[in-house]
Amino acid sequence: MTRSDQKAITFKITTKEYEKIKQIAKSCHMSPTEFSRHQALGNQITPTVLEVTDSENHVSSHQFNLLEKAYVKQKAKNLKITKDYQKAIENIHKDYEKVSIINQLIPYIQIDGTIDNEALKNDKDLLTALSQLDY
Image (cartoon, rainbow, N blue to C red; front, side, top):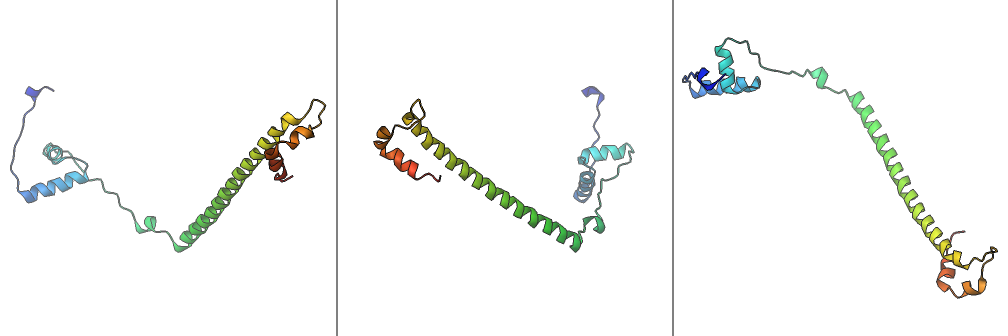
């Protein structure tokens, strides 16, 4: 449709009438102009209304208590999992430190598997770290 095919109709209404049309148009998800055009053409327009009944909106106290208990139980479970996770991370860090200390000992191990005690005695930091291991 080109611009020359379109015609405009103008009519005057009161502010009260406009507000009523605007309110009805809004409930139909339309602009007031669009709503008026459809009405003038005789199209049947019904507002979109969703009603929620009390039975659909109501949660019984029994259901609420069950949901609340499930929530508290899940929250406690989540807290335990979080603590276990944090403890596992701490253990991993401790194990990493132990491996790091043992790796410092490798240069003192000779080809036949014995430890060069004379050289090890001079490494006070490594001896201190080895004495603090939980073995």
